[in-house]
Amino acid sequence: MPDKTATLAELTDIFRRNRAALMRDIERVPEVLIHTPPFDGGWSVAQALAHVIAADTSFVGRVDRMLASPGGDIPMMQGVADAPLQPSVGRTSRRQFVEQLKAGEEKALQRMAKLTPADLAVTGKHPRFGVITVESVLKHLAEHVEEHRRQLGEIAERVAAQPPP
Figure 1 (cartoon, rainbow, N blue to C red):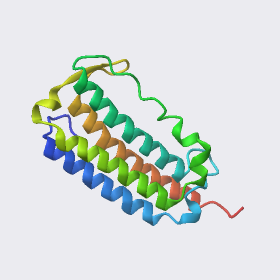
Figure 2: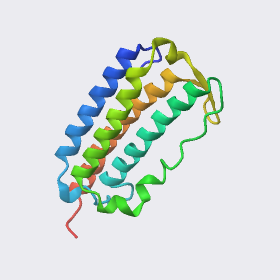
Figure 3: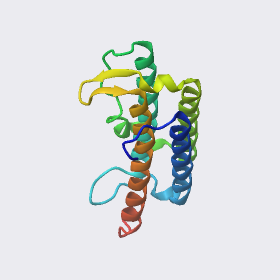
Figure 4: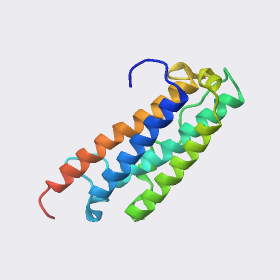
């Protein structure tokens, strides 16, 4: 997304479109490949989805913290990097991932619906990125989904090309 100021409606629209495309992408991955990691390393589709789900919660939480304490310290996202490594990820079906993604999407959209244009300018201090705005967090949320859409396609292609075990 270009470095321009976005309206709340634009951010919501981008988020919705990226989520809808992610859901379509998930449906294209055969169920038997969801948990298969690429032989050359990296996350499985399931692990990438677990990461997106954990990040959804963190992004919404970050916005909540920023609005509750404008200008305050915003901690690094907790548990997002570790989420794909949790044992439960290996037992989660595509249907369950889709349900969790839809729940995260609904929570994010509910949060966005309560924001005002002025809320987009609220800031917080991030330990790595410095001063960030609610707008930048929402842009990152939309971009994060797009980034992992590309990743899911790459994983699925690599796994499908693998020789059978």
